[in-house]
Length: 366
Length: 121
Image (cartoon, rainbow over all chains, first blue to last red):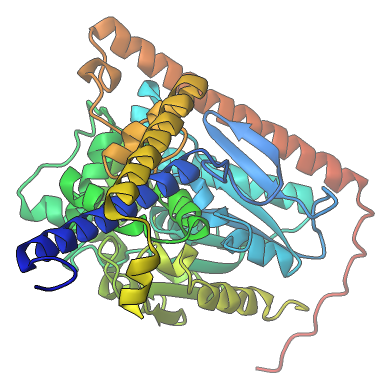
């Protein structure tokens, strides 16, 4: 007879050992989750100290400060315009992982428009309110504070669309323009408007707009990101991630606080974007776009332009972004590996940050 | 080596008992956080939906009244509120324009530049 016992008993022992190991691993994951959930971090706020220099409705214009709490005024001002349907802090995510912080550390006087969370009356906000109202007044405020006639503008996603429209209408006030994952060709397959178009949806009602709930806006993004649209899939992903180190998990948490904290969207703005720039209409590329009653003339965009697309972007497909060369032929096109968010705030985002600083710094003495 | 390690370990039954105690501790830690920290329940609720979203509950569909008004009166009120928001912006514009005018007055007048000689045709 074997000293360790008969074979069936050894099998049972092995099974119990395996179960014990499984139990330990599960417990370790839950302990890590507890640690992450109870550790303070950068959630919902930017990583860099900032002062509010202008407020209007829900908008706050933030000016980044240096280590001594003073604004930087060595190099030309830069205004970051994020998408109004998400939270601004993707531009300033974490210490060491902040696009705006990187540009500020290079000596630029950096401002970020935080559009805030719209409430029910803001459902009437249209493209003109954003472009000729909020964005224009942000530019004017930055110009007034810095005594510069023209400033640099960096627009992200829908914020890029607003920045492009603004630059076409007021080109003399924009020194250099950076557009990140900004769709120009509305007919390119992919992206939220295209999905709605394919599903035969009429889109939002312009005349009787609603405030589109955050959960619904989020569901549109989820439709474009397979795997994130079921609770079981998300829980399974999170459970797998709990093997990561707590520091890494804290980064993931900050990012997921941005991804999952979508804000409600003004229905009139979405209706107008869909009707003017979306599939079929494709107003930017066809030259039929208007803001209010003003026609948008893309040929007025004479300042240097850098347009950046992401290879794996499901929200703003790269082909639709790179189409800017059709309306702004002098635009520099840069296509980066990664997704819609990754190129701006992911682990390899430094490529974009570095190129942006080079681009903004070019011709500085002129 | 593996056999040697196994021989030095406490018996399986003891390790299972120790593991059970660890689970009790983990459970108590969670209970403690739930009692002491109001936000923890929100965070835990989010985690149970597969999200590490911090600071607020995972977005869910709000009641219809939150996005559209219930009565025509509410609708009118919203329109008036938004019109006031637009006025607020126009007042800011006016202020900015006044500041620009003031600053222009403060600036020393630019020297009149001699007219450029006409380029030969």
